[in-house]
Length: 357
Image (cartoon, rainbow, N blue to C red; front, side):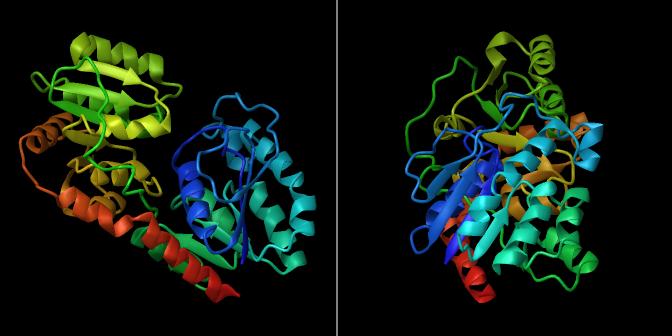
């Protein structure tokens, strides 16, 4: 098979969608011809797939996904995705791809639907947006296959678009990269350490994590991420926690496993509606117990290796963190993460793609 992933953000940032694109493309490239078309020039190490770079006009423009214009795909980044996708047309017409995977949605889905029809390719959508407007838009254009990341998302797709072929395949994790027995990071924080990894954006609700940690005695909070709320979160953390109990860092993705290994508990309490959450898998593979938002998606990913809370109830959230800091759950997190190895996930994708031809 000949497969192409289209993602303007690859080569610019290393978030969940970008890492998942890389990991999946790399494994599929072992048996198939795989391309990744990206907007940035940064190349991930050990890429086995072919890379084509279509430079982005405003690569450093702030994330506009929360703007009003995003509802109509007229914000800056949606328009950049449109222009990026238009410039893809010659490639998609000249190369006979069997599978076309537009990662960015919006106008990209529309163009890829037309081009896939012209070239007899199969249009595949991976539901990274989660239940809501963006994936409703993707489903509107009737892809040949929609990949749901969770049972919750699968049930939603079957309800609103029962005639569209849908398969349940979750995201994966690199079990060789994320494991406890390797080099550890060094930070000047009191132990034990609660770790939170995520973009410093409103939907991640990291301010609630700071408030909950502040209720615990002699416990530190380490946050890995960057985003528009960094200054606000720094101000709140410095106000509620001592300097040796609070730290925000932005580190390259390849360094992140070292920080999981110095933590005692992982937490991220994003708002309900997030499509998946790769960081939970990374924490599980690092054998960390987890405290997460109580919803069906988080329960499906974390299983019995965590406690689920309403993070707006700060006392409940703090009690859950304290419980996990003092509870020995053995290798339950690692056992749970083994269900999501990228080797297993890529094999499911391969079988599903072959069934389309």
